[in-house]
Structure formats: C-alpha cells, structure tokens
Image 1 (tube, rainbow, N blue to C red):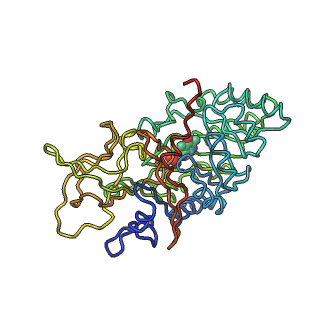
Image 2: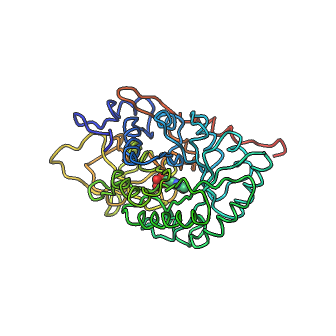
Image 3: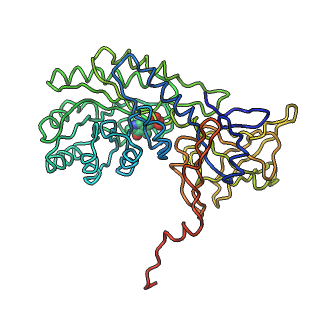
Length: 421
Ligand SMILES: *Cc1c(COP(=O)(O)O)cnc(C)c1O
C-alpha cells in the first residue's frame, strides 16, 4: 500500500496533486511520500516485535538526507556500504551504535572513519578484510565488533545481477569454511565476534530461499556456540521484494517474513537485525515525467519522455518492469493504445517499456513511474549532460525539494581545465 492515489481523476502524492509539483519544480522529478516510508519501516518493526530486533534500513536504496532523517527519527538503524554512506548516516543524526557496515571491499580509510565515529558492527566478507580490520582497530587501540557474512549457497531466484547468495557470487565466505574462519577471527586482536551475517539477494518474491538460508544460519549458530563463540546477534540481510507489476505480483508480506524469522531463529536467544532497503523506499516514490513527442513509427508509436535511462536505469540495466500511469486518469471508455516508452538519450537501451498499453497521450502530458523510490535517484547519472533531477518529499499537504536540479553552469564548472590545455 502507498499514498499515491487518484483524487478527482488526478494522481496525488498524499494530499498534493502531482501537476502542482510539476509546475513548481519542472519535470522530470522524483517524489517520495513520508507516510509510505514510515509505514513500511513500521511494518518490519511490527513483524519482528516478538524478538529483540533492529531494523537497519539499507540506505543504498535511497540515501537522500531527508529520507534518512525521516527513518532515523523513528529509531531506524542504517546499513551502509561505503564511507560516503556512513557519513550520510551520521549527518542524518544516526548514532554509530545503530549503523552496520556491509560490503565486500571496505578500505582502511572507511574502517577508520567508522571506528572513530562509532559503529554497531562490521559485516566482514573475507579473511583478508578481517586481517586489515584487526590491524586498523589495533592501531587505534579499539575493538571492532564484527559478524562474518556467510554465503549459504542458496538460489534467491531473482535477477542474476542482484542475486548474492550463490557460491559463484563474490559475497561472503562459503558456509562450509565458517568454522575455520570464525576461529581465525577469534584469534585476531582488535576484533569482537558478535554474530553471523547473511544476505542472499534483492527483490525476492518467495519466502523459501530466505527459509533455506536462515535455517542454515540457525544450524551454524549452534555449531559456532559449541566451538566457544559468543554468537549473540544474527544479521539476516534484506531483499524482500515489492510488487512492481501490481496487477499480477504478490510478494510475501513483511508479517509473513517476520513469522518466518521467528520460526527459524526465534528460539536461539539472539538479537535479530534485518536490512531492508527496497521494501521501505521502493513504493514510497514515483518518477514523474512529461511527454515531449509522440512519434509515429512503423507499426509502433514511440512516446518520447523527458526522463531517460540516466534518471532511472533499472529498465535498461535489469530489464526491470515499472508500472507507468497517466497523471490525469484515463477517461473511462477511451481505448488504450500500445506505446514504446523511451527517453531522449542516444542509446536504444534508453527504453522504459515496449508495447505498453496506455490511454492516448501527447506532448506535455504527465506520466508517473510507480515503485521508483528505491534504486532510482541513487543510481542516476548525468550521462548526456542531463542534470540530476530534483527529489521532492511530500508530507500530508506540504512538499519540499530535498535535492535541487543543478544548473548547467554547476555541472560544467565541476570540470577543471588545466592551464596547459
Ligand atoms: C542491497 C543490500 C541490502 C538491501 O536489499 P533490498 O533488496 O533493497 O532490501 C541489504 N543488505 C545488503 C548487504 C545489501 O547489499
């Protein structure tokens, strides 16, 4: 459920009609709903309420400071994957004890930054990384809390580019080697082994792969405890999927996901962490664009929008589907027409949808891409020297630009021409 509904035939973000935002900031733009962000965070909190838990929002999904602060004020933790994200979390007021640091390639500088600013735990992904963290922590005279990310060799049955829990993926250490890697961690100075971490992929639309992974983690918990490790925290990752095509997708609900976690690890007397990103932010955002031209081709009509692959790369990168709807609701009885919906970038990959049925549209009409709040703005680029598009946050009947569109001069002046050129 979200807060983008038609009222009197006009699509609204909470209480604001989208044409009002379009008139104020120009198109294209991203718009996020505060109520939806909060609702999704609370769904996870409620789903885990029977257990000692922390919901660490995976901020790579959408790391705008206003989004982070909205969630941080509810008590959310953050899952960060870079020094930059760590700095963003701190800047949004998240205390170090609510930040977990994931990622396969943490540098010494990133480790130092997090150890200085405070960290709940590092999720370690390899032995070399473990040795480096031990060295950094030791040299600073501090102890780094760590979990080790295990790779359970489970098929998440999602797009190959966002599956992370198979043995051929670069993530984590093979579960079969966990015993020896934990022994090594326990022997290194400067590390405090607090638990186990797992994350098998993103946009999972079934619970079964989670169950397989979590049962393996439960078994490993017992084994490692028997080896003398004080396993007291399980980070179960993120990955719960969202319905991108509302008409025919129904991924599991957070309540059922929570019940599964309770079933798999609830008896182990552990603190549970989860790292949802997409489910919190995805359906809390729209990308709103205008039609520039309707181009009639041979056997197909192209709807050329002012938004492009640089603004929302998911369709060209993952062949991802987004519902695309007119901002002014279709008049009942008017026949829909198939369109290829494309952007102006000079690549054929700049195609959002092919043969998509829509009410007849023409120049200056507004369309909205649903489910664009996660992995949208954060993956945008300025390819073709197209400015990063504004992000807008709505709360009830208020809205504000939370990242402005840069001017051409601002973009150009980031380049430096040496005097010897
Ligand atoms: C990307 C990622 C997440 C979030 O995944 P979602 O599908 O957005 O919930 C959580 N944990 C880790 C380690 C990740 O890399």
